[in-house]
Length: 331
Ligand SMILES: COc1ccc(S(=O)(=O)N2Cc3cc(-c4ccc(C=O)o4)ccc3N(Cc3cncn3C)C[C@H]2Cc2ccc(O)cc2)cc1
Ligand SMILES: [Zn+2]
Image 1: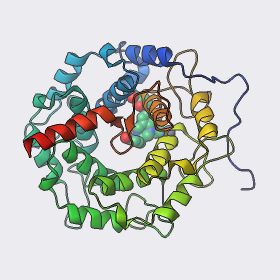
Image 2: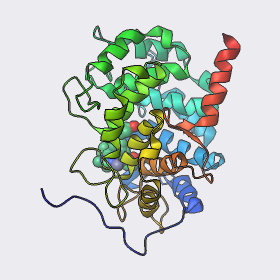
Image 3: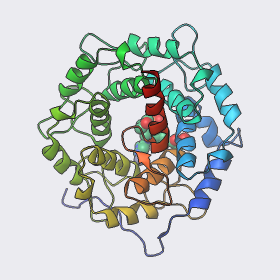
């Protein structure tokens, strides 16, 4: 279509970071257990806790989260038979929520609250002959699950439990001519899946297989006049794509390829100055998911009022550093 899809930033948009408002928004999110949205997002509860806690950690406000309640909730979500962890009591264990639970417990330094060997068994049992990973017992393959698997095992210092070479081979089989990646071999390039595949290769220490310049070009082509980034050509900008694109460029050491000032004004415009929180685009309803990626994006852009975020794990850099220290101690 001739009309380039983009948004126009209004003059009265937020131009400064409303940290206290975001802290209040996340602290009160989920307090009202009968709240419509809270009930509708039960199926992703474990990930919702990861998005909220990480955002609060980045703002140095995690003391406002109910730590003991979260830790005991996670231990009740582990399936004793498979070792996997579900989004909420009574739901099926899944790779997505097993990772979220491990990320939360890593930030709290409380991995003792779960059966770590059980998690290792669950994750490694989902790897297939071609190196790919299922999300759960129902057998959906997606490069998102390759990323969940290697990130989860890396946080547990147990990458030895899977075939890393075959993991890399499958990700390489999903590489497109534009240097990007999709969810499966032949799927079209998408910013979210590129983040997952670059992150997988980064953790496996195999970034040399990438077509770095073609890929970085495709990524910075995502930036629109509004400053925002989209996930594919011809799509509208969306705050969470800021994270997928910038964290990938950061891992490629090419983050300077985007117009930082323009992108920062798009991210700030996605804040809700009434309720606090960030939404996918200016004027939409905020949620914890976009609130994390707004703060993490600003952290990558160098905003020092936010703690440094690790571009691969989307967790505070200090958590990754202390985890690596621990692993060196025991090696
Ligand atoms: C509101 O509609 C959706 C659509 C998909 C999902 S999702 O779980 O498949 N998912 C993550 C996601 C979460 C939210 C959200 C609302 C409230 C909360 C509480 O914590 O979280 C909102 C959107 C969302 N999406 C969908 C999306 C994001 N930007 C545009 N859209 C349409 C992403 C989606 C896929 C996903 C991405 C990363 C990830 O780590 C996990 C899942 C959730 C709600
Ligand atoms: Zn989004």
